[in-house]
Amino acid sequence: MNQIKKKLRRIEKIKEEICTITEMRIGSLSEQWNVCGNSNCQCKDPEKPKKHVPYYQLSYTRHRKSFSEFVSKENLNSIRKQLNNYKTFMALKDEWIDLSIEISKLRKPEKRSHKK
Image (tube, rainbow, N blue to C red; front, top):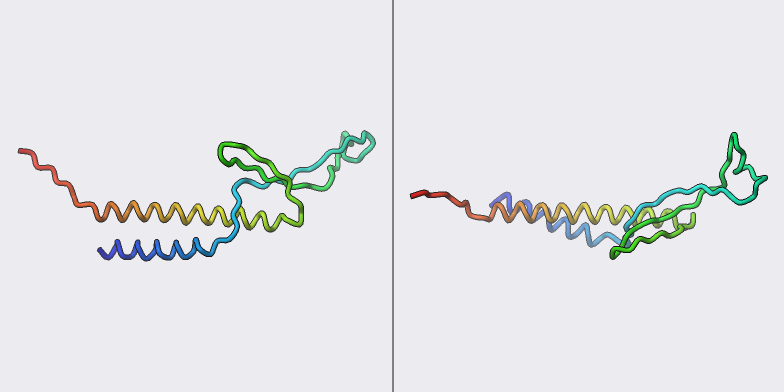
């Protein structure tokens, strides 16, 4: 029973941690480099092309639909924090589920096979 109490205490801590999580976003953030349409531009140099400043893109799937959004530099840190919050939430959720399964197994009476 001591193992069960320990796992239940951890679940309570997980609940507390989940309650501190603020905004969340799913997806992956990528840095894209742009090439323009000007044939005389440095980005078109055949030997040493120098692409234009990067832009950022968030890609994700929600309700079986794919989405892609541009992210401004001003919002970059906020989006990164939201992505990290989601990862934290998922890790805590998975730990909670695993602990619940372990508790269930500990509470389950042992089945003994008696062949007659």
